[in-house]
Amino acid sequence: MFNRKKKIEVNAILDTQIEELLKKTSQYEDLVEGRLICSSCGSIINPQNIGIMLPIKNGSKIKFYCDRVDCAEQYKLDHE
Image 1 (cartoon, rainbow, N blue to C red):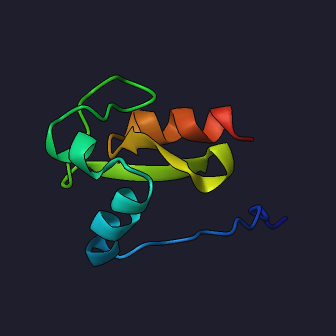
Image 2 (cartoon, rainbow, N blue to C red):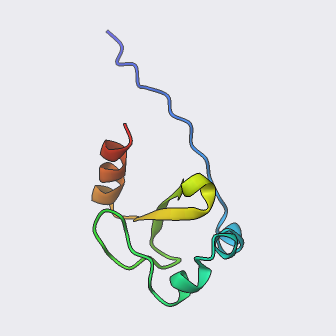
């Protein structure tokens, strides 16, 4: 009768915190110089198109997905 949706936990970060976080993971210069890429489509990540940031290697690095809908869907498929 009712379609129950699965609950998910969402962690968020403010735009103002991204620079600080990327400096801690030594990825800030990569962002500024266009060396970070989307793990799904391969586009260059910039501050305006960050969709998903996924901590990897015990939080010492961040994996990125851009803000395209198909990349967010790919992230969901990869992490279910």
